Structures are given as C-alpha cells and as structure tokens.
Image (cartoon, rainbow, N blue to C red; front, side):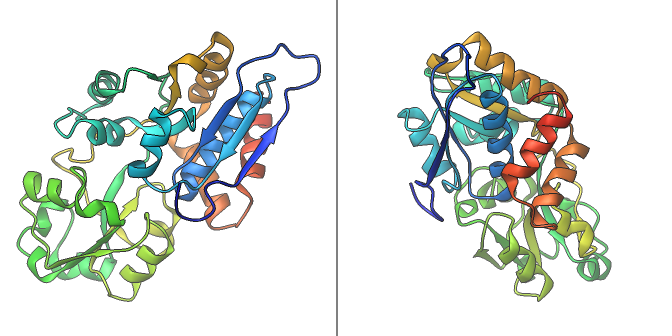
Length: 287
C-alpha cells in the first residue's frame, strides 16, 4: 500500500470451540478515527470467533479502494456521503437517506454496505477564532469575499477530489489564494492553522483539536459535505450472516458523541486504539 507501515498486520485466531467463519482482512485509512473504527470492527468479529487480520494506516481512498476491489482487504470503515461522492461525483448526499442510497447505488459489484451507525463525522472548513472574528465568518459561504487572500490547507488528495477544492469552487464559488497539501486533518493541519501558514483548513467535526484550540468550524449551509454516517463496507463474499450481524451490532450502538469521546482518548490521551476499542466493545456487551 503506502504511507506509514500499512502492510504491517496482526492476526487473531478464532475463539476456542467457535464455528469457523471466513477470515476477514480489516483495513483502515491513515487517520486515527479510521484506525479506531477498524479496531472496533476487528474486535467485534473476533468476539464471534471470526479470524481477523488488520492492515491499518493504508493511506487515502485512492490507495485502499483499489485494494478493496481487488480483495487485498475485505472490510473498511467508511462514511456514507464521502464514499458516495468518491465513487460518483454527482451523488446526492444532502441527507442521511439520500447519502446511503447513493452509496449503495455506486458501490462496485463485489462490495456491500452494511447498516450505518447514527455516528457522523463530517469534513469541515475550519478557521481560527481570530480569523472568524476578523471577517465575521459563521458559514462557508461567508468566505467567498475573502478566500482570494486566504490559503486553504488539507490532505493532498483534496486538490483534485470532487469533495475537496474543485467542489468548493463549484458549489460555493470559493477560489482560495493557494491550496497547501498537509495531512489528513491531523497534527500538521492543526499546527498550520495555529501558526498562520493556512487561514482555513479541512478538519473533521469530531476532532478534539477544534474545541481545544477554540477553532471555528464554519456551517455548511449548502450541505456540500452532506451526511457522513459511519458505515462498514465489506467484500460481499465475506458478508455471512454472522459477520454482518456482528458489524451491524456495532453500528446500532455507535453514536456521534460516543465516537468523539473515543477519538479524544486516542488523539489527546494517547491511548492505544486497540485498547480503546476493546474497552468500548466490552462495555457495550459486544465482546
């Protein structure tokens, strides 16, 4: 794959005395929340006796979607609207039902989307409190008169994605002075926003850095980022009744506040994602 150590994997054998189920390779993107969700999915499956291997930190969709299509990984945590837009730039993601329907319609033949959770984590355009006050910014639309003098920061793939720079220009008429490629809503992006290298940045709405730094996530009045429910996407051939039930049980218990709390444990408290996942699964009766 690429980035970090994506080929590093860990395997867990089925629980003693359990019925054999197809081995599942669980992947994740290269940001903490995706890794955490992958660990949650892996733990829930292991509790049902499924043999699981994890391949975490694989990089962006541009890298892991081909791997998913090719069967190199079987399961990935995704977000309804963002994945729908990735697969079909014209997908309707304006609300939860539309985003889910658009995703299911756009999925490759060998993949299936299981039940979405109520947990959402959306992309945002975020600014510092000082910038918000200076330009009276409350919404993304408020950036229009000022974008030409601002640098936008975000992950490298944002430069060409429909849900990135081109889409912001198309939907909001935003033309920034420059786009600066950073990381996936991570520490580089946070630092660049804090020190003024960029004046606006792509951060996730569950990111504890927004509250910690008194940043302002601008309101997306045109639903550009759409509904973003966390959802397991799985190789259809591996979606047995047992596997599907275990993953759907996770979705049923995961909400936005819970997800934000778990992400804070990983990002701020520096807890190991696998430990945070195991603790939550046990508390919820899923392990």
